[in-house]
Image 1 (cartoon, rainbow, N blue to C red):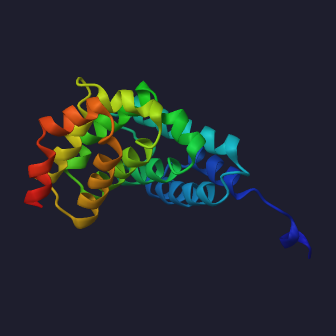
Image 2: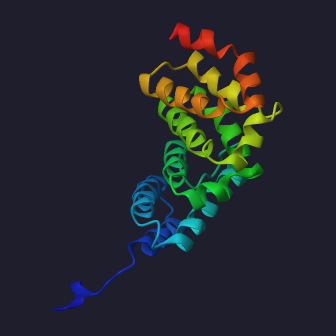
Length: 194
């Protein structure tokens, strides 16, 4: 009768479930719950959080152009990245070429097709913009992250998307090369139009 008093590691259970489940909707729900738990208990589950971030990034990198057998749907994936980036150590781990390649690929397709994905991706970029090591990726003219973020407004003008985009631009305005990007897209007239 004391079985209910045994402590179970729900984070490990969910991670195991995600790796074994064949149902994409169940994996999406499990990933949603998992990232919320990681966010709430980030100091107690650092290793599990890093492992899950690696799972998410590798599932993106492996399946992105065609998305034949994705581990997560794009809305679940973008939500997971946005939520995981709130943890500074995870954000620092994500600030690399692979992480920004994933953001670039999301900006080029899914962000112009789904407003919630656009919000999650721009929110992720906003969180990453607080980390100095991410600025080189925002400065990269080949990636053109700032330009692609502003392009989202051609498709969606939800207030929350505009707000998070303005907060991203506000974080980048002190960087001289990012200022050039903002000038190139004529950010001031973009803001006035809104």
